[in-house]
Length: 124
Length: 107
Image (cartoon, each protein chain N blue to C red):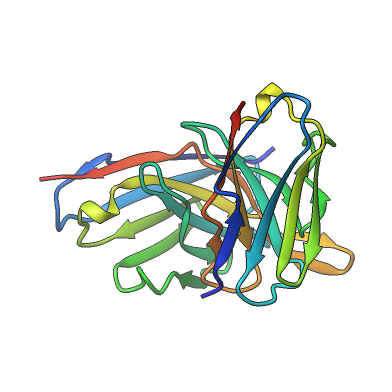
């Protein structure tokens, strides 16, 4: 049973860098994608980006200039850095695995499981 | 970007009711559509993947259907623990996108 445990600073000032890490317990990195998703208070879900087990990244164009996602397979961890934060970046940040799932010859990648979430508040 | 539109945004229902939530994609996504349930202060939880496949451990009262651009999540008999917000998500292309959510409340 794969579990994700995440941590990082919860209070930032404008222009600082958000850094979060997610540890993967009980599973392999191979074949899956490792994602970050955020949810502003009272709002919906926004995909930030992801990294493959091989280290290839894909980012949401709306955040691409400020985002870096990295992987440390030796520690079974992946991380998110978001630079130059503003109040608009205040949100609960989730890590999640996009699980490789084969169904009737087609590969699909639903988000499962998710980390517990980290509230990051940006305020001066 | 593929826009995902859910309807309704909220609904009130009673225990035992049949509940249907719809999700429409702005372009075809084949069956790369997933459904999640989110309770307050918790992470979303996968219910249905590939439009109609029930995730392990999810009660059989949940079902999904659809293909192309139009999809449906059905709860056949609403239980007290089902009051939550439900999100659809397309996995057809990046950026991956979610619907705005449907909040299911107690009538």
